[in-house]
Length: 506
Image (cartoon, rainbow, N blue to C red; front, side, top):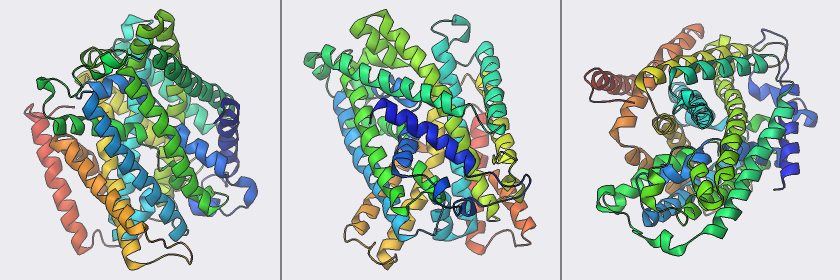
């Protein structure tokens, strides 16, 4: 995709989003209804592809060389990319298949879970996706101020007092911009798109020229302290999933697609483009610096790799590109976070106040809640000294259940043979089965620490759900939902105990 074309896609995307979501202030309007306004307010294939690519390419790729090398050698990283490539491809194909088979279901991550097992499971999928989005935004801010630390040492690793104060200012400036309808978002995203694409392509070309096969093959399977190959592969999983979060972006905005088939096409095309970029950055870096050296780099580690290849100007380029890119990614994911609350609120699964929009079409209460949580967690990073890698691991752990719910629903859908005429394909069942196995593997690879911490964030959501049920004059839980709630609460209590005695930490 050329830079100018992708820039135009981002400009058009934000303009269309805001033009297509402008009801009367205070009126709850489900996103499904927004999508019925005709072709002028819809997103075409190129815009949907730009949405997927733009959502995926954020801060993660800039720290990818170090994040991968910190727990694995070149051989294990290759295996990790093979597993991730197959797994994420099946997830992309899964969302493509379900967009065609179930065109009436919008905001797929939430809607598929709700169709699978009712309102409470659907709520938890939306809640987990929302929490993952705003924790990811905290990670974006930490990464941005860590990059600024290259120029201003007071910002350190992005979790010092100065960094938290600066990040808080950025948070509320962006919040105010979004509430005004982000009229300047088109210009910002044009700059952001260039900042994402050009440095990445330049990095790949320059590092490929500096690539040394002897460096790449040195200690190919890692040294003893990295553990077995299986342990090394597991260590790459949360990182690779983190950099692919956003693959469901087209599905989240499915109500606004001009043609339903474009949702799936955009998901697959976005996957192919980003996989090529991510693998190139990760693997080529191992031919410039060996695994121990890469593992010791400060993030954004792309800066250290390019500095080794071309000198100091390469590091400066990456730091500046990251700062600008993270600003755009933060804006995009703020909108996605609000959308993940807005749709279920419009359908009565979350409190109806979260469906309220301002005159500019922005889900205002969802925005305030999202920004408040980012602010709280920024303060938490100050006192816990939570690192960027810890934040992205927690953000990734929160999204694993929504992905699993989607995959299991896909298996049931294909096993029953449900779907519009002409949408049933023989390979759909094996694809959905592989996607489900991959999601289960991710839960295993995440390990108990992040699963317990994610339970601590899932459990409070029950209070929000109970408020919505009260508004709908519905009973709190169905019989099996009580069991889900009890299990989640038990895990959250265990996580709270682990934190209190120092056996668990972010």
